[in-house]
Amino acid sequence: MGIPSDLAVGAALTKRRSGRFWPARLDSLQSASGLFLALFLWVHLFAEASILLGKDAMYRVTMFFEGYYLFGTPYPIIITLFSLFILAIVVLHAVLAVRKIPVSYRQYRAYRDHQKLMHHEDTSLWWVQVYTGFALFFLVSVHLYTMISQPANIGPYASSDRVVSEWMWPLYVLLLVTSVIHAAVGSYRVGVKWGWLPARDPALGRRRLKWLMRGFIVFFLLLGFTSLGAYMKIGIEHRDQVGERYVPTWQQESPAPAGRPEVMP
Ligand code: HEM
Image (cartoon, rainbow, N blue to C red; front, top):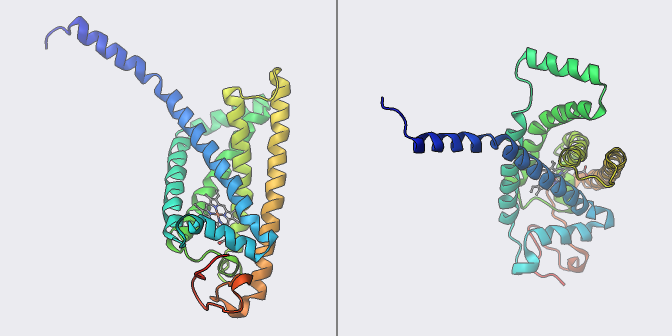
C-alpha cells in the first residue's frame, strides 16, 4: 500500500470531523419529531373533544378531516394516508430515542447510581420518558392501525361504539395518560435542553417551564377524560344499535341508513 497523499488525508479528516456532528443532528431530529408529535396530540385532543359540543359538531369535524369541505365528498382515504404519515414520524422518533436507553446492566446501574447521587428531578424525568415511551410503542400501534384500516368508521356513533362495544376504552385510558405525560414532559425537556426558557434567569425559566408542563398535563387529562366520558355515555346508550351510523340533525327527516349523507348545509 502506498503512502496516502495530503489530499486523501485531508479528505479523511474532514469526513471524520463532520461525523462528529451526527449525534447533535440526530438529537435535533429527535427533538423536532417529538415536538411535532406533541403538537399533533394536543390538536387531536381538541378535535376529538368536539363531541362535548354535541354529535353534530363531532360529525362536522370528521367531515372536515375527510376533506368534505374541500372536495364536496368525504374521502376517508385521507385519514389512512395521514395516519400512515403520523406512524412514520412515531417510528422515526422511537428509533432516535432508543439510542439513548441503557442496553446493558452496567449502563443501567451507572445511570441509576448517578440519578440517586444527584437527586436531580430532570434526570428522573428522563426515566418517566423511558417508561411512557415504551408503553406507547404498543398503545399507539393498536390505535393507529385501527385508524389506518377503518378510516370510514369515525363519527359520533362509530367512535362511541368502538369505545364501548369494541372495548377500546381501557386502551384509550392508558393511551391518554401515557401520551399526555410523555408529550408534556418531553416538551419540557426539549425546552431545557435547547435553552428555550420563558425567563432570562435559567433557574426561574426552568421553574416556569415546569409549571407549564404540569398545567398541560392537568388540562389535557381533564379534556381527554371528559371527552372519553362523552363517547362512553353515547356508546352505552347506543349499545343495542351497534353499527348504525349517525345522521346529522339537518338530515334526520330523510335518514340515510349507512354511509355518509350526501348533502351538507
Ligand atoms: C392520524 C392519526 C390519528 C387519528 C386519525 C386519530 C383519531 C382518533 C379518533 C377518531 C378518536 C376517537 C375514538 C375513536 O374513534 O376510536 C381517537 C381517540 C384517541 N386518540 Fe387518536 N388518532 C390518531 C393518532 C393518535 C396518536 C398518535 C395518539 C397518541 C400519541 C392518539 C391518542 C388518542 C387518545 C388518547 C384517544 C382517546 C381520547 C380521549 O381519551 O379523549 N391518537 N383518536
